[in-house]
Every structure is written in C-alpha cells, then in structure tokens.
Image (cartoon, rainbow, N blue to C red):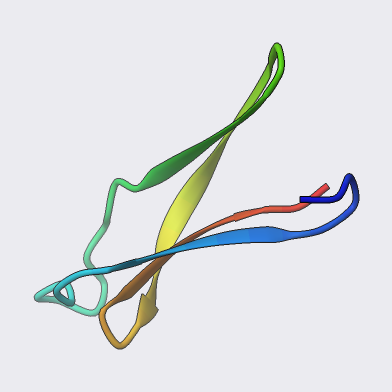
Length: 54
C-alpha cells in the first residue's frame, strides 16, 4: 500500500436480518508503531467493508 492510497478490506457474510440493523465491525490497520482503527459497514449483497484512507 502506498502512502496516499485508499485501502479497502472486504468480508463476505450473511446479510443482517433488518436493513437498519446496527453492526459492530472494526478494522485495525497497523504500520510500525502507528495503529488506526476504522468503523466497518454493511455494503449490501452480503459484503462488509472497512476502508482506510489518508
């Protein structure tokens, strides 16, 4: 990953039962001593995402 690129993690899973369901998905990105945690989200079609951008 280059310094100024956006990185997206994608996970497959079953869809939430309710379209307004709250999910607790976090992605942790670590580079050397720096750690960043971002909130994930349901992207539809059984796909969950976590996106890290500069």
